[in-house]
Image 1 (cartoon, one colour):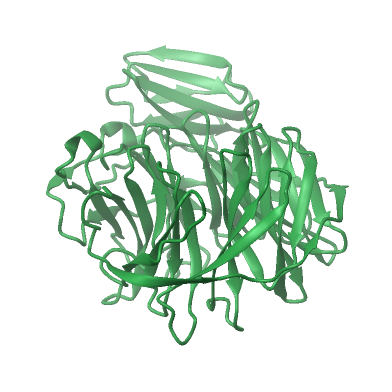
Image 2 (cartoon, rainbow, N blue to C red):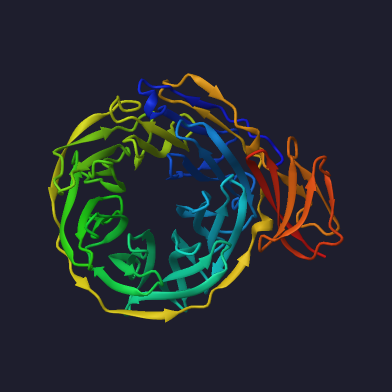
Amino acid sequence: MGHRLLITLLVWIGLHTARGQEFVQHHVPNDSISPGEPFVRVLPGGGIWMAWLSWDTRVNPWGSHLHVRQFDPSGLLLASNDLLFPSMAPSLWLEGAAVLPDGGLALVGRFAWKALLVRMDANAQLATAKLYSNGTSEWFGDVAAVADDRLLLVGSCSVGTERWPWILRADMDGAVQAAWSDRFIGLGGNHQKVRNTADGGTLVLGQHIAGNAFSAMHVLKMDSLGQVEWGRLVTGPKLWPKEALQRPDGGWELMAGQQVQDSITHGAPVLFRLAADGTVGPNTRLWAAPVASTYQVANSMCRTPDGSLLVCAGVNALFGSAMITVDSSGVVAPWARLVPDSALLLRVNALPLDDGDLVLYGARYASTVDTYSPLLARWDTAGAFPCGSGSAPVLTDSIVHGLSTMMEHLALSPVVEDITSQIVPDTITWTVTDPCGISTEVHEPPTVATGLRVFPNPAADRVQVEGLAGVDELLLLDAQGALVHRWNAPLPQVIELGAVREGLYLLRAAEGAAVRSARLVVVR
């Protein structure tokens, strides 16, 4: 990117320095835009990816911004990118994310009535952005990196007047290798989650629709080729899947949300135990700090290093959260950690780190300006909870459900549109504060986070390059990764393209061990 993002990072060095620093980072924009709740994923080694959206409806009701950050385990910024999407309706929306084998990040969702895939490289630079359509309205709910450097994308597509769950297998650049729908006969709906399995396959979770309401959820086990090994449709009442974690015995712990009143925000998390062959075992519904309105919502579920499950759930109309522990044998702790609507988060989500710490994330509400903004924290569970917490009693019961296994397999042929060249650097900058007042150090982002900027883009005869300070070598690669041209220092700020064919290219600059990259489209 051609501008430098001045981001203040506040890091608290805790007592357990051998285990890493605890931090709380609240990302506040420099303008009156409306940010969304972040997507957070943990890299091997404890690094953290964070991505979120924002919308500036004052200028354009369909203006969409994507913000991506990568941090080391102590909260120090390693790479960043802020991108502005073309003005299309409806706006950009994210639904899922996955860490890629090369350390990059895949993001999926919907944009302009089409399913969207965005891939960022390991330095937070945009690698590709593509739209997929099969009819008039599509979206992706999740993505997983599978064998042979492929992606598995799941979501919902339109077929005539019906909504079908669909699955796409693609390469890392988004080129479709196969597309199909595995659905329960006669039922429409969507796939919402996909998780890798220990045997190289995947587990797909989704939801089915009856009329204008959701009525059931499904679980599909697929092998490494995408063939269904078994499928289970859990027929209500009014369930939607949230997370699935595989057990050492090959079975699964599945968390769903269950609606108990007319409003979708009235319900509770339900935990199902599935055997490796898909046999559905007993279930447990969790109620933390029950209130008269029965407001409960399933947020997230993760497994801590000791084998326990940590379930995060909203518990009241003010979006306070409860963190409920379930041990490895399925016994629910009688008390939950209650996180009130406070300076920390509205809805708490948690991800585990190998050393026992937890990454906490979600949206923080600022009542003074009536806006939400993304927040990221790291908690050493041996110490005090960031911003304080209390306790709440946990009650349990179970639900009655039915099962169905009748499925059909139908091939699809989606249309793919590349919009990479239409996504440009954004001008929104962000300040990072600590609402809990526990941090002391200030850091600026490394220069590698500035990336490269090329303009015009698309280009015909020549292109100007910014961000070459300190760069030792500049490469021009074609869409297949083959070297087209190499420049050594001193590097040109204007590149002549007369001998370069039309197509998509990657400019890659090396500064020691650091790499910056930028996409370039050549047209005639």
